[in-house]
Length: 48
Image (cartoon, rainbow, N blue to C red; front, top):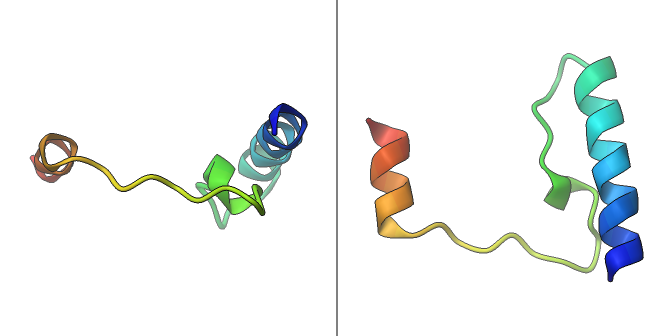
């Protein structure tokens, strides 16, 4: 799925630069891939 990831990366960068609705994540443009859940440590860091 490297081709899909590369295309999704380009689409994400284009969308984040040109649209004010963002920030978009790469998984917004990857149809066959799901975002992995974050760990407890990552969640605690984002809350601080």
